[in-house]
Amino acid sequence: LIKRAREGSLEHRHMEGGTITFSNFGMAGIEAGIPLVRYPEVAIIAMGAIVKEVVVTKDDALQIRSRSTLTLSFDHRVIDGIYGCHFMQEIKKLVENASH
Image (tube, rainbow, N blue to C red; front, side, top):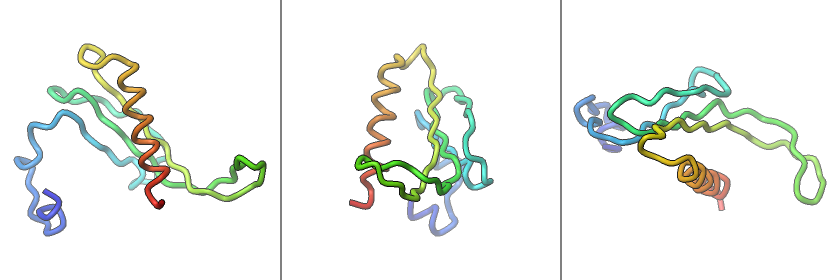
Protein backbone atom coordinates (compact mmCIF):
# COMPACT_ATOMS: atom_id res chain seq x y z
CA LEU A 1 0.00 0.00 0.00
CA ILE A 2 2.83 2.39 0.83
CA LYS A 3 4.47 1.71 -2.52
CA ARG A 4 1.18 2.30 -4.37
CA ALA A 5 0.61 5.55 -2.46
CA ARG A 6 4.10 6.83 -3.29
CA GLU A 7 3.66 5.87 -6.93
CA GLY A 8 0.26 7.54 -7.09
CA SER A 9 -1.51 4.28 -7.97
CA LEU A 10 -3.37 3.74 -4.68
CA GLU A 11 -7.08 3.36 -5.31
CA HIS A 12 -10.04 3.49 -2.93
CA ARG A 13 -10.60 -0.27 -3.31
CA HIS A 14 -7.10 -0.88 -1.87
CA MET A 15 -8.06 0.86 1.37
CA GLU A 16 -11.40 -0.83 2.07
CA GLY A 17 -11.96 -3.19 4.97
CA GLY A 18 -10.03 -1.29 7.63
CA THR A 19 -11.06 -0.85 11.25
CA ILE A 20 -9.43 2.53 11.98
CA THR A 21 -8.73 5.65 9.92
CA PHE A 22 -6.01 8.26 10.35
CA SER A 23 -7.12 11.75 9.34
CA ASN A 24 -4.91 14.81 8.93
CA PHE A 25 -6.47 18.15 9.87
CA GLY A 26 -2.96 19.61 9.97
CA MET A 27 -2.59 19.68 6.20
CA ALA A 28 -5.20 22.47 6.20
CA GLY A 29 -3.50 24.31 9.08
CA ILE A 30 -6.16 23.22 11.60
CA GLU A 31 -4.71 22.59 15.07
CA ALA A 32 -7.43 20.23 16.32
CA GLY A 33 -10.66 18.65 15.24
CA ILE A 34 -13.13 16.00 16.28
CA PRO A 35 -13.33 13.30 13.63
CA LEU A 36 -16.42 11.14 13.17
CA VAL A 37 -16.22 7.36 12.92
CA ARG A 38 -17.45 6.01 9.59
CA TYR A 39 -19.28 2.69 9.84
CA PRO A 40 -18.16 -0.11 9.63
CA GLU A 41 -14.89 1.19 11.09
CA VAL A 42 -14.63 1.40 14.86
CA ALA A 43 -12.25 4.33 15.38
CA ILE A 44 -10.59 7.34 13.81
CA ILE A 45 -7.51 9.32 14.87
CA ALA A 46 -7.00 12.88 13.71
CA MET A 47 -3.75 14.84 13.79
CA GLY A 48 -3.69 18.61 13.92
CA ALA A 49 -1.12 21.01 12.53
CA ILE A 50 2.35 20.98 14.06
CA VAL A 51 2.97 24.28 15.85
CA LYS A 52 5.87 25.71 17.84
CA GLU A 53 5.32 26.70 21.46
CA VAL A 54 7.30 27.47 24.57
CA VAL A 55 7.29 24.63 27.11
CA VAL A 56 8.73 24.17 30.59
CA THR A 57 11.08 21.15 30.66
CA LYS A 58 11.56 18.72 33.57
CA ASP A 59 14.45 20.84 34.86
CA ASP A 60 12.30 24.04 34.73
CA ALA A 61 14.04 25.44 31.65
CA LEU A 62 12.09 27.10 28.86
CA GLN A 63 12.40 25.62 25.37
CA ILE A 64 10.64 25.97 22.05
CA ARG A 65 9.14 22.64 21.01
CA SER A 66 6.94 21.34 18.24
CA ARG A 67 3.46 20.23 19.33
CA SER A 68 0.51 18.62 17.63
CA THR A 69 -2.89 17.58 18.91
CA LEU A 70 -4.10 14.03 18.30
CA THR A 71 -7.74 13.16 18.87
CA LEU A 72 -9.40 9.75 18.95
CA SER A 73 -13.06 9.02 18.32
CA PHE A 74 -14.32 5.47 18.69
CA ASP A 75 -17.48 3.44 18.88
CA HIS A 76 -18.13 2.68 22.56
CA ARG A 77 -20.21 -0.30 21.52
CA VAL A 78 -16.97 -1.95 20.35
CA ILE A 79 -14.20 -0.36 22.45
CA ASP A 80 -14.26 0.50 26.15
CA GLY A 81 -12.94 3.96 26.94
CA ILE A 82 -9.95 2.72 28.93
CA TYR A 83 -8.67 0.78 25.89
CA GLY A 84 -8.93 3.95 23.82
CA CYS A 85 -6.85 5.74 26.49
CA HIS A 86 -4.23 2.98 26.49
CA PHE A 87 -4.06 3.11 22.70
CA MET A 88 -3.48 6.88 22.72
CA GLN A 89 -0.81 6.49 25.44
CA GLU A 90 1.08 4.12 23.15
CA ILE A 91 0.75 6.48 20.18
CA LYS A 92 2.02 9.33 22.39
CA LYS A 93 5.08 7.29 23.45
CA LEU A 94 5.87 6.35 19.86
CA VAL A 95 5.60 9.92 18.60
CA GLU A 96 7.57 11.44 21.47
CA ASN A 97 10.38 8.91 21.10
CA ALA A 98 10.44 8.73 17.29
CA SER A 99 13.72 10.62 16.92
CA HIS A 100 15.57 8.63 19.61
